Amino acid sequence: MSDRINRIKEILVIQNVSQKELAERLGKNPNTIASICNNKTQPHIKIFRDIAKVLDVDIRELFVPTKTV
Image 1 (cartoon, one colour):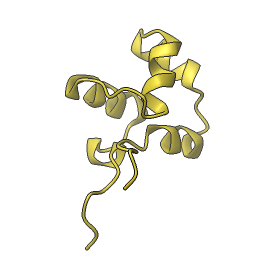
Image 2 (tube, one colour):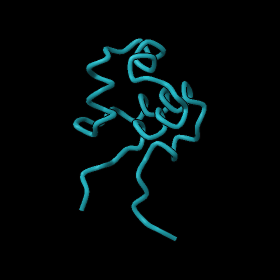
Image 3 (tube, helix red, strand yellow):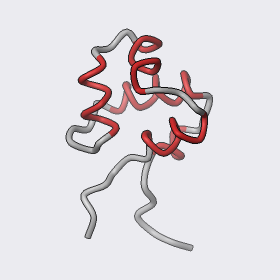
Image 4 (tube, helix red, strand yellow):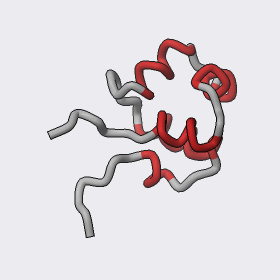
């Protein structure tokens, strides 16, 4: 089983947004965003909400599905 929990890095690539740009928009340290994007750490759900708002996606899109339909 994969330890991958979020898809933020994938969404950034799709939207052509850098991790540094996301960090600036959120007012976060770029190293923090890199750790989140690489699934080394997972932020509080409030940060996921903020990321979803900045990237203009539904918060559910930020997560790797746990069940396939």
